[in-house]
Length: 442
Image (cartoon, rainbow, N blue to C red; front, top):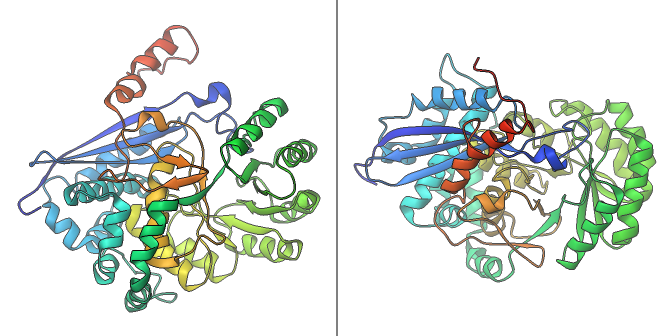
């Protein structure tokens, strides 16, 4: 690592036409084209790091531009300086006086994820293993504790990690043998017909899945019918979660879920605006007597909103997203707050590269922090994995730990050639035959 310098950062707009089959459709996002801003960090030693942040098609170009703007703060930096003072470096790029938050914070995730991938590749370890092997002091040194010390301090975080250290070897052995449990959302996209839902329920049960999620929120009558279809397919002994993707008012969420309570959902995900901490708290208070938890986090903008959701008992399940807040450093802070406040983390995944990334984070949590799979499960969606050089491995509905160095974020060259937007071969073909309109030159 000594003498290694970041010489160039390349950013690409990569999109996949998932809207053609309604893959990923929900009450809020009816026609998503799963996409990402894809970052490649190049060094003078030939080692590269790859990172991304997930998007839904239109507007990806804005995130790409933000990544390029952040890149100007990084090119020319010595790699050793980044990783030896990662928390300070993270604060530098998230608190630059003229460049803060919003889309910029989303772009930060792509760049920071690429830096962690680079670090793991330098150390020749998969990211989960790199995180596990860091001492408590080293790991905590990567986290910016500004704004969250009223919940957890740097020293508290170190002590929590030290208290789990003796169990890490046995937990690692268990992880390698058994993996971590997954649930599938593949059966529950809103645009799917009832027949397709039945077919997918059967398919995923045969693959060993016993936990399923369905999208709800557009029409109550349709939700009742679709939940009934899924329950008939999976029976009463398997878990069902519901996801409204932010479409309801607070009172509406409570009443809607009372109508769906008979299907015994484990949780309702994103019942209202992801920024409404008190609204989530009210919904959670009303639904707990019905045995329904509240889950949210995939659209949380930063660790501070997570802090407030946890403090207010507004969520029963904390859903970190590997590409939403500012990369691994900020996500580690959320895991530590959730640990202290005794809220299980169940990562959101399913978009481009999200499954590939969150598995590493949850595996670190299992080995170094929580030590349990009780009430902890990782979302799985069977899409876009074929585009990655090191895709997830699912065995009997469990994520098996990656062994290839890095954050599992490198997209195949052929996929970039075909799906970089708008110049990719597949996009040019679809423009030519009129499946999608060709973007204007402006």
